[in-house]
Length: 84
Image (tube, rainbow, N blue to C red; front, side):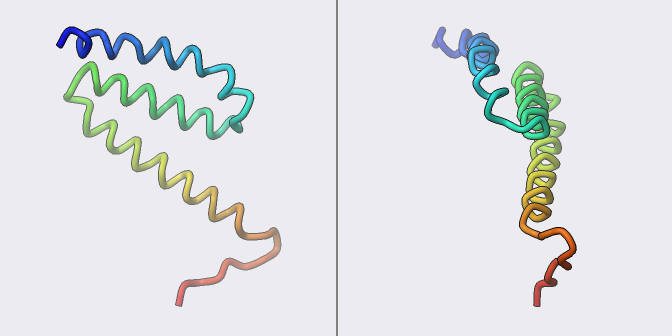
């Protein structure tokens, strides 16, 4: 029972330990998405009234990632194919 009280305090420590390796491996945009999502999730963990904001940010970040992945698949000068 007492572990659940201290568990949210360990998350920032784990994030600090993982920050340098992730910064070396991720592109700046991906690192920004990760940081934004993590910050909003931590805020929602502290204040349940922020859960709708956390869901909206998670959805938006996922959409941005999908759009970037789609852009990466389309070559420059090539028109994207429309779904039929």
